[in-house]
Image (cartoon, rainbow over all chains, first blue to last red):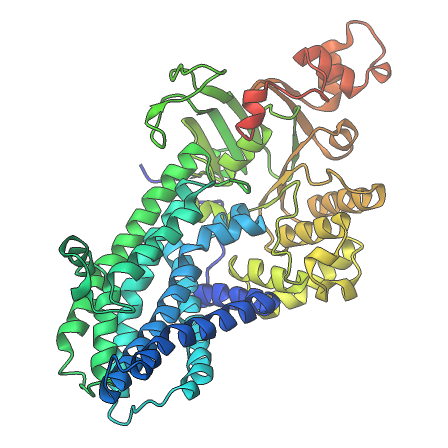
Length: 286
Length: 289
């Protein structure tokens, strides 16, 4: 049975396009980011220090004669790319997976979730901000850290690298949306659980080492982590100068992951939200 | 003839319980009353039915833990009722939640803002997610805030710099910014200083007179309820125990006494058997009712 129409003089207001609604979240997060500039500075410094601390390991290998100069140059680039990609991925994962946690911290969860915005639009806005924010932060880290090392990126195919970042951002956003379900289901400990998801991705994806060095049972997980393919693709593009057609396997894998994780993440989020509404977990305090 | 779709809010036989059953997180039966019973959910809203007429301010009065906030959350589409039906101008809050959300807005006891953003930035965001353009928000905001007695130069300071009363005025402005046809005011003047309270109450009355907004007001301030509400219901133990205009409610307990001698607090106590100041059972309060 269809519901009776709203009285003619009570019109349901027309909503603007979904992109405009999603952009409202980008704007909001940008305003918050400006207010929390001190924390942003902390994370930037941490990112720079982390990048330097890890990449200097390669320099030490050269100084101690463990590796040849050529190998050191390769290792420097390998680790630099790993740390920068991880800085990007972790920023995206944080911004999106904390979508519910943010609202709880600020006490706005009820007002935001009762707004007439479809959840996938809300999540898309947060994902878009996450990607833009991560790009800015990662570029800053690179600009500050790179001069500390002698690196040769003359052969890099930047178009291929950008294609990997673009293709890889979708499955990472999908993964983050899945992780964002945890704070909704578990108000007290869900945020901590979502950080555990990040930790697992870091371990198995070849951020600081080739996945081949992992024990076989852990290597199996690397095949289902989109970050593995992002790192492989970017290293191939920057270190080996491979172009888009040469890294098609990584791009195809990332597209497939994105095709599953984005809609899958949205569906799981919707199911979790319904359960949270059933059990009263969408309150201001957890 | 009044049809359901002319009714701003129609609540029929709504029930909501929390707890009971199996706690999947610990793989153990839930604790209820200190024992691992697992079979005793706590009913927080118990077969509640009422409706609001167009342009009316309808009050729901109850002590802490009586089910007021749970009721508001169900109407706001934040909580799914276990049974019953809630419709806003004929639209089911569960099946048609997006349409419902476009028609309603809410003020809570706590202002609920992004603390480090300014009032303007908060209002811009909340206005935009309700479909307003930045221009519309910027045009409406100064007028609404002025009517609430809010100084415009404070609107560009972070919300955390504002007093509780100022924050709540911004919260009221946020809710009326979108011109909702059904307003949910959940203890909007709790904790406000007397002047801010009067400003908010005057604004509510003004909006009712000038706009086609129907208002559901929950409060445990009897004076406020009498001042603002056209009809009042008493909620106790999750049930509506009485409903009517202030005069009708007094008449229910008068028993020959002069009506003017009967305060609404007395009416509440005699009809519910409780003092408004005492909390309901701890389980209900813990359930966030």
